[in-house]
Image (cartoon, rainbow, N blue to C red):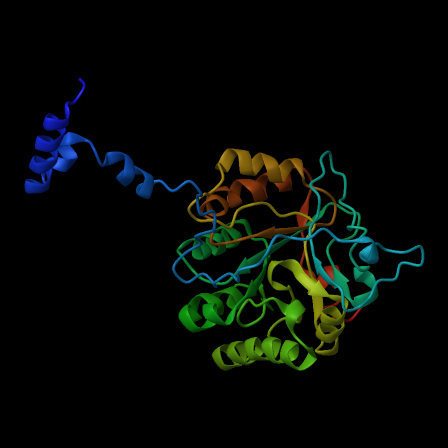
Amino acid sequence: MKLTPIMAALLAVNLLACPASWDQAGLFREKEEAEDFPEEEDFTPKRGRFAPKRETRGPKEKPGPELTRSAAGTLPVSAGFSWYAVHQKNGVRPPAPLEIVPLEEHGAYYLGPDEPVVYLTFDAGYENGNVARILDALKAEEVPGAFFILENLVNREPELVRRMAEEGHLVCNHTARHRDMTAFGEAEFKEELGRMESAYRKLTGSEMAKYYRPPEGKFTAENLDWAADMGYSTVLWSFAYADWDNEKQPDPDASLEKILSGAHNGMVLLLHPTSDTNARILPTLIRSLKDRGYRFGTLDELTGGGGSET
């Protein structure tokens, strides 16, 4: 229907006099819907109420030629690296990325020996009910795990941390506050790990297991050396997957198949125990790996006796 100028004027007067009729007229729904559904969706992982806050960063830069390993295998120690392991299948063991400093030269590990053994490791910064379920599964299946924890977990869930140690798991250092450790100098770096040690010592009266995992896998060669100075071996991983976003949990069947298809000798498996998917699939995952001939080892075994000792 085409509105004449007079009809348009009368309609405008009516709408101004009766705001309740605006929505009935449907004239402003388009604007409201645009506000409810912004064009750019926020994909920031919403991992839980007590999850450590993520820092805002710019686009990830690809390593330039100056970070490519030379024939002699040398890299500037101050270069920052972000660890990753490319998924392989059919039992193939993932190679270390060429652009990253050789870990073996700095007391660090990402892969065990070429034997049918799996090392279960968990990065645990907070509890949402699933960490306890993970511990239940490990206890029922009688397999060891290594938990890299933050100060937050000690402060908010002391009984859960005590349980990890009492049930025979290694409780390891993931730093106190989940910071980008590549931005720290030596004193700050050692203070951050020492702060985590102090929190654990105050709670349990014992020392943490001497294994360190850098937040988000970000490190420099100097970081690895500083950790070694403190008696730590840095332990990265040979398999991980996108399991950390609590509001976008992956399908359990697909996740189980993904992990099993990527299983390999000496696998250092990184899982987030806050993941509902992981809590659901862990018993089946453990039994399936056992059925395939894998056993479950400890980080003490991986590193040849614990800490930075080889």
